[in-house]
Image (cartoon, rainbow, N blue to C red; front, side):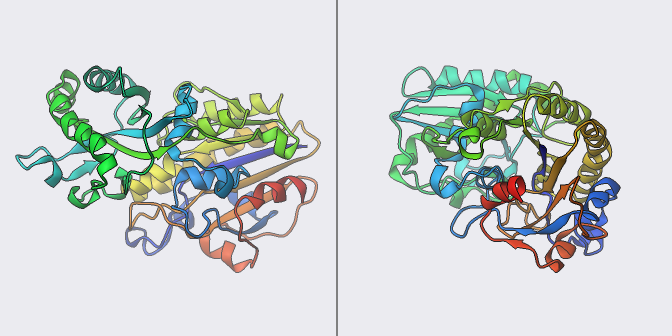
Length: 402
């Protein structure tokens, strides 16, 4: 038996005025997903338990079968594991975004966050900027490590996670940052670095060139997602099978690394609609030849939700359907039996531009045990089936065993 999970990050949504009051899942042309939905178990699953923040960290851990209430130690440590950082027991890791703040004469605290990803800055440009930040602040209590695109990592040696509210920047795009800067005394060294980073980065040659090219500058770091060294158990130890992960983002690759799963490195995988869709699909099939389960993660729908791009969110769903699912279907033909699960990790509603905790639609297709499903899968049709999984981490065992 082979198992494939296709995770459309942030695909679920609320009705979007720009889409005629429909959700992107309702509007998207997705014949391959709907083909499966007609022969699958379809329902809703709560991936984010009450009391937890609806981040991709918590939600993906749940879908992968790890209970965040038991294993979660923070978002950034998972990303640090992907980068290859060997965190010590007294280290604290923080996600370091490169963001665009308003270029005005106002004090740092009164600036507006214009873009949480600085126009999806390239990894090459970002690496130069993070080096400048490391040169300024690193080498002692703090060390900065480059990641992918706008996503990077700070290791605070001997740090604390008691930092008050370190707000994710994608939650406050377009807002003045004043009330989102933690006033916790322990966080002040971090806030001071954020302030000083603006002066370091605003006239950096990388940003001068970006502005000349009509792109937003990455003129500040933004710190959040603090946590201690991860404590995940190996996937095989829990479920008895070998697993693999395909993703463009360090968070998901980090979960895979911590769970002792095989993790792919796919050239051209970006985490947006320009990603190497075919490369990720083929990597998944390659990994499936030596593993029992592969978890294929696509970040693009989530990014489009954060950016308030309804048309691109629809396009992201359609691209995965047309450029990934056919390759998977063809590659799976050689196996006597297999199961496919398709779902988002959480909603990323266009109207709010941030994550939500609402239950999300899922489908589970079993080649040798097809069932009557729904004509097309979306938030509404999934709810109408009455199938509901209230505890997200249960879905993996349900997928493997039922």
